[in-house]
Length: 74
Image 1 (cartoon, rainbow, N blue to C red):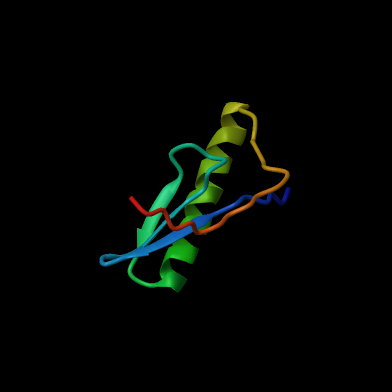
Image 2 (tube, rainbow, N blue to C red):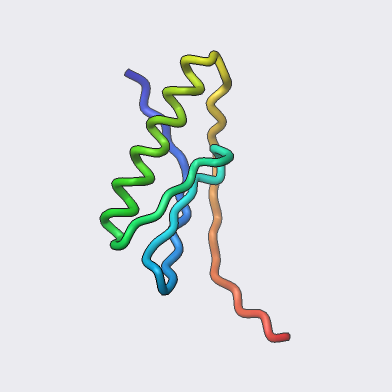
């Protein structure tokens, strides 16, 4: 079994939580609670990686991730 590390972005809005993995295009999910979205994104990543492995595709991984919240006045 191989262990991979991926960055995950989780955003909260009025409908709940949305999560995606920037390294894996199209790998995203949502949930009503933070805990639910964490479980859902972990499953989504696992299924996405399993599919790539079966297809012989590369598994992209980031070496470093930086995230900040920025205010912009317009």
